[in-house]
Length: 358
Image: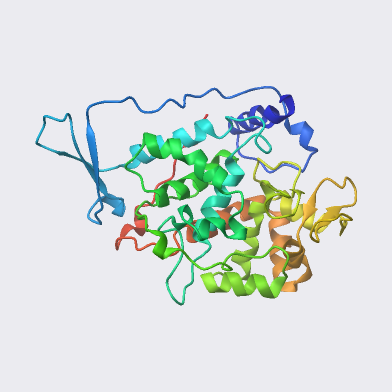
């Protein structure tokens, strides 16, 4: 438990200064004592009754609520979510990210980012289907797609937040969770725009739209070009692998990509270029391990980024410049999170940037 709480104090200390890029260090060096206390009690009960009214006329396309103060009232009042309301949702998520010391590396941040990415990465620009609008991973068969294994943990984590803020759609909540995860793990600011609506299981996308980590550069281009990304954006998105880890009981692969899996830096690119990688000798699927410690891993799709000349030039740029990586990562994540969403016209200038927790 002591090792699982250390990075949180380290992360808070970093937030009191500028957000620096720092060299990869052994994971244990990031763990110090400390714990964030939080309140997860449900919203206080009242006699108010709420009714969701979907409407593009609401600010930012986010919809509005009608409610009555008590059962005797016959005059409903309109509640239109504003920036402050979404900031409150952000704050609730941030306060609970580190609630379980024994979950992975002590933070739900990486799995929340993965949920937002997998909800968005089903987009097909030719058919206009998929994307972050709908939150269709709530239903089978999409929930049981192999690429989504383990994401029930993220969806369950967000359920108490949805109960506390019933006016927000699952689609907007999942993406807000991804934005919160990035910023709270010392990543760049990611502008956010509400306006997604939830859909039923009829809108579930077919299996096979998300990347297969066992494949190479041709597969990566086929998957990401379908969504509308280019080579530079593919590499920038891959930088998210600085966070989190693979699990044998989910993807079959095992281990973290970096020594600091709850802090976003450009270390993923540095390690890809500078570490010596070898095939891991084990009974699982083919993956690489670092020769020096044998505690880190890379997947075939990761190694494709340095085996392909067009990809590699961007790996080299991001390894050399953390600020450039953050700038491009923020831009491409914003694009990813808005794929397939029919936002109201003109709302592209109504994105918000949330304040991070202290």
